[in-house]
Image: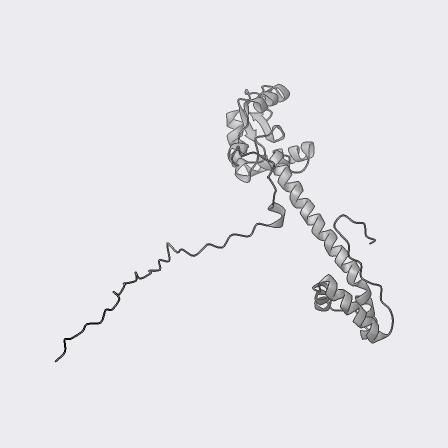
Amino acid sequence: MGEHQTFWKPEKTVKEKKTYNSLRSNKPKAKKEIPEWKKGLLAHHKSGQSSKDRCEFPKEVVNELIAEQGTICPCCKSAASNTTHHVWPKGRKGRGVKTNGLRVCWPCHDKIQITDELLQYWISVYLEKYGDHFWFDEKDWDEYNHKLAVQQQKEQEKQQRENQIQPVVDLLAAAAGRSLKVKEVRLLQSFEDKDMAVFTTLMADVFGRPLEEPKVYSYGEHFDD
């Protein structure tokens, strides 16, 4: 009887089981989309004051207010003005700027804080004196103007788009014997420029008359209303 032979077998490696922890997931978190008007908004600003710090009145601003408004409280007209009141409240992001400061005495300051009628009175006074957003600081104005510019650009692009599709809208309305419905106009507005050019040519062939070729405008280029 021959000798028993044992064949070599590779050792089994035990793989470590992966556990999924919902609190410590390794899955990459989806980044929050940044609104268009916020992109590059404060790229030129250096890191500095927090939003809370920007609501405090700097010493130089307080000194300017004292020099300009005097030392007598304008509310009671008798006590010394020993504190600076935020006309637009700090809780509403009223900044520590000169156009948002009112020198008053402490009792009047507390009275304004708890009396909505007095609060609104001084807000109306400052609105008339300094205009809208009198409580804004430099960063607030940058953000506001940037947002406004983006909105204006969108409106301009919308107007340009309406000009592009108008010949097609007019032709379809004439053929249908009625004005196009809102959802029908939106369908045309959803077309890309190339698709609209193809559609325009197709409509011209179908109805047997040439249409004005839709113009493509770049941002900042003049267009007729």
